Length: 238
Image (cartoon, rainbow, N blue to C red; front, side, top):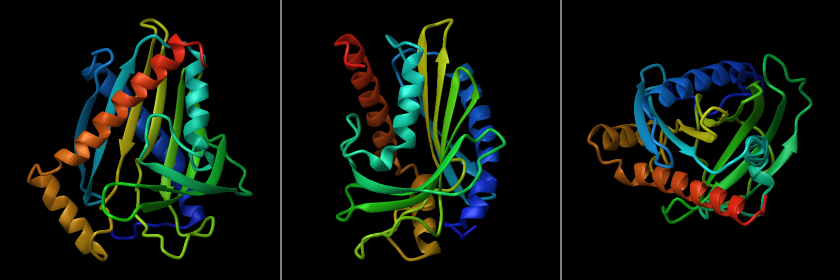
């Protein structure tokens, strides 16, 4: 699959399926990974996409149920934020509303782009349809899929891409008083080479276990999220 961007209509149609896939992935991961305040990253090959998906999970202690909605809204509106307290690589973004009636588990859609310093010399821009939904009272999902439209990009923007399943899932575990965060990332490359060559390079690095820097990024973001949430709770800043 080399169509890394899809149309708005295609992304809207994909969103409910991605919600369900991410929910299933999260439930299975929570059974395998039971540690508290320690993250795990797993990698899975998706043959239909000819790419990998990375799934990072952390169960954060010291939270309360309301943190789920607060964090879900923050993820959904990331592009409108001046900064992300737990992720300094985020450099900003823009968003715009879409005139599409959500449904099939999706509550909101918006188009946006966000830019990140990934240590590649120039920032990478992600232009996406972002979709928010709540599969149940204890779970929130934010899906982000690369699309071919959205707010106007800077002339110098270098695009990178995400495929489904990709986004964030939050779950409140009332029995254990834990907030579970699942960061699910499916990106075929970092726009280092043109077209499918970029995917070939990324796949080669991953198959040869040369993805330590990528895994470290996911781990550090999860640990930073834990520290930020726990500090906010302890100081009463929520």
